[in-house]
Image (cartoon, rainbow, N blue to C red):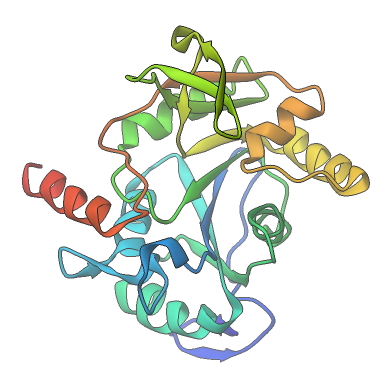
Length: 250
């Protein structure tokens, strides 16, 4: 692991950390610790090329350009910390990245590691998947604005298909899709409430697939806003092909 110096050189340290923020700043946690086993690649999918640049570069460029974001924490598998510091953060000069930290066993552990790397508390924090490189700044602003009313705000898309609840090979019921949303990231949170939810989840040994579920579980109010069709999660080679097509049209 490395630390970014004044001349953007690297030296040994527990995390990469170099800038302070104020309480009015919005921080972003970029989750890039997955191995991408479903993709079938030799390297994690966040480092695969999209228009000749790693996926994560597209994600970080959008956060770098967002005036509302003052600091970014990147969470990666420990064996990739050196690489991302040297080849991604250093090479592309992402000066909003305040720390690169190793992730944990589960996503929830990784996000908590990112939160703990923030040098000071924040009013708001955004959590985003590195493999969703095509989100718009408008969507980012909408979820952040949602936290004026709620403890958290997530983007979601309606289901186009009929949804069935199953048990083994048997269909149990048809779920009204009007009340369902397919949730994306970025997700925005009141920092203090999210940290409290993590503490309660750790005490209860409760794990979930996204941080909004922690807020829901422990009494928080979660709002939602319309997601974006273009904001797809790169999970399979086909997703990467679709992302290439989206970028060609923008």
